[in-house]
Length: 372
Image (cartoon, rainbow, N blue to C red; front, side, top):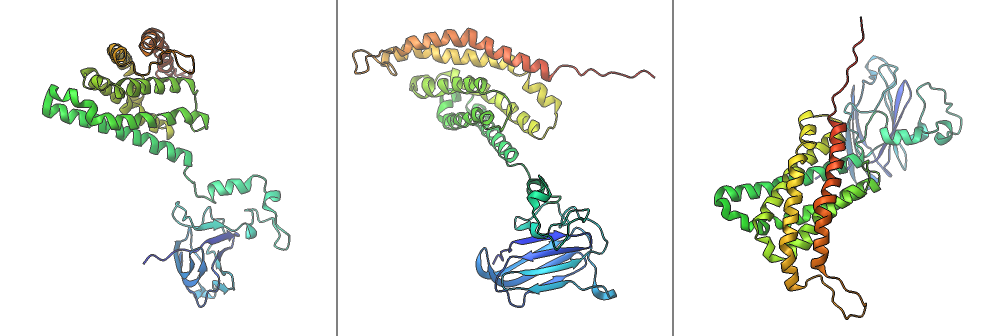
């Protein structure tokens, strides 16, 4: 049976530590206080209702013991709380309560008893933390007296990039294993085996368009939107919508190129989140695009070009007159225009953008030596 922990609020001065245990109707709690640890157990009413609660804390530094005539720790039981007053062995300011840098979720700061490190506050004055310490309330909630909380945005971005990396590794692994077993015969069934995974990963990439919008990452929205939407158009409107194109070898090569790009890009993003410069990863990220981007655009163009006669035959996505909207749309003609935009201006735009990034990221560092 898992014993829940109550909410514990702590405060300190340079000489003592005060703990307020948020439990009601506690009778005869079991409190064991040693040199540098506290163990509490008691039945009361807390966040989990009326049940048995308990916690263990390894303290940042040592407490005084009453063996040498020192003041014993004080345990006071009230109707709505249990209070502990602990004397520090050495008069000093603790950066946090516990020995470990990780803070338990149930441990909070008691702002009602909060004193500044210089000890200028008076106990008989009404305390207003927001007034007396501008900005400190927010800082303490972020850092919690020596505990550094992991930025939730950073955690989310790491999980997202790691998930995408694993996804594209899975696609490559399935394609590689099947090719090792069946050789070229596996090419025609590529979409059948990895198409669902590729579609899911592609839809997930639209989150990358929203990341700059919500301030999760830096950069613009237009470039990632065009890149993601271009792939989505080829994957969903060209390959998914036309079963005959799904068995073509070009789909195998297209998925191979997309996956090779992504298994480098996502680890690079993770390294940037933690501000770790791994040169080989940076070099691959800003060099692999030189052969892979043109090959990818070539494969996408082949998929679109091969689909033109198919959509001429099926008239799928084509809107013909007359209709109630008085509007006509010939999808094969749109594909021809899209090919012109994709093959030349689109390639130039993407390659120019990547070239600028490569110039900035891989430019040699200038070291200025001071003359002796």
